[in-house]
Amino acid sequence: MDFMLSGVRSFNLDLTLDCGQCFRWKKLSPGDWEGVAYGRYLRISQRGDTLTLHGTTQEEFDLIWRGYFDLDRDYSELFKRFHRNPPLRKALDFAPGIRVLRQEPFETLCSYILSQHNNITRIKGLVSRLCEHFGEDCGGYYAFPAPEALAALSPDDLAPVRCGFRAKYVIDAAKKVSSGEIALAPLYTQNLDDAREMLMRIHGVGRKVSDCVLLYGFAREQCIPEDVWVKRILSQLYPKGFPKYLSPWGGIAQVTLFHYARNCEGAVSK
Image (cartoon, rainbow, N blue to C red; front, top):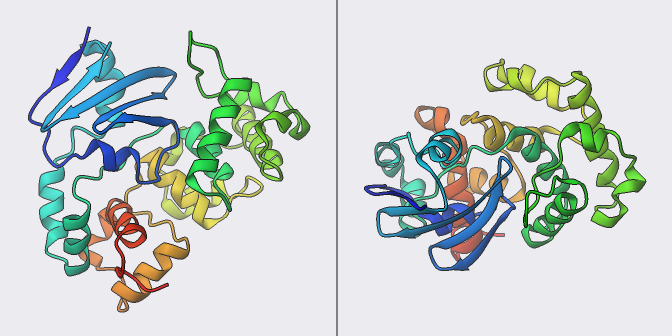
């Protein structure tokens, strides 16, 4: 059974799934993707303002995919607010309709640990191999490994993943989450500085990775993860600082600005 949702405004599926925020989606053709999230396989298509979730029930849509794709947020109103800011207006005109996904927290944590000093293609390969070797086989696809499954391993056990020095960081994250030393649920609402500090107790997690995890895994939309590209954006497009009136949604704005800076020639100087 397919579930169809019409009237979806300000949403570009291709840009959202290909802008670098997630690593388990494969493009089949323009507007047609397959991937795994929260232990569920999904093939999803977009034609105009209609989304088709293939093989999905209303119950599964409400339980997983409505929140995952942030479909209850009025992005049209948010983008109107963004459009009043000149750099963001250019970015939105170049890449309209990028949404910030609400990804599974532990998967996001491990994925961004693996992302360090890597390009997107390699990150996707690392995450895929981690799931294939240590995730639950759900019949043709693999769920992301549970913290307890990874906590029982040693860094050497991750050799088939080929993640190098990051293996010990992934195992440390799994051990601290599975033992309760790092409690994930409170990070949705905890004071932001305290949430960052909690994540940075994990070996290999610094400010940039913690902000990525909080933004993409815990919907902390004010987080602006600063890598080389974002630092260029802020210094060149916002020399007086990012506008305070946009700061509650700075992370959402950052995703569009990041895609714009990396893909539009001349948007920022290198």
